[in-house]
Image (cartoon, rainbow, N blue to C red; front, side, top):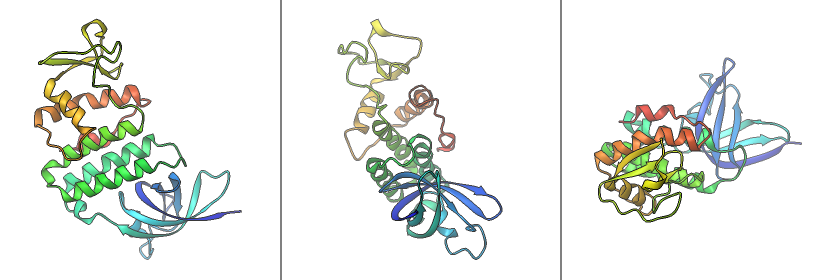
Length: 244
């Protein structure tokens, strides 16, 4: 017997299904990530077509049945469309980064209010900030999301032996080890990060407001793809290449 579920959720991704329907991935506040079938939503007269836009926050009603991976959407009402973000392609591209990350990394139907809350704070910050810092906000919150996924970089001392690293110049950051390393634990996946970049990475996890210099931003973005691939099951984010 079906249970009727009513909850809030962010639209992470939609995929066309047959001629007039969509399969949508939704990060809900109660059940975590769920997949919903929105029948007929692509028809011109559908009353919920506007609710299926990416990163909308909706109130959704669906029928949950046991032994089903996709549930039938009954109704959806937009709570917040984040219209200010949609005015600028740079903000849209930034917003989609975290949506793609959660769509690809969150397990199905495991409640994760931390992820839901982080996405809310991310989108609110993105719409209120100047468009020039959209890339900064996207990368900072992506790094914050690493913490929830259990792959936060180790930045305090050598990740292998925990020896203090005193270096005012370049710091060895091992992709495979997941953090900074001393000379004794240097490996083939080490990239060289400047001290300001290491300090920036640390501040991302300790502060709510950030200013990230362009050089640090470039260094961070350059190692992110390899880091995610190694530590998040070969994860690749297509949206990162559209950040500006």
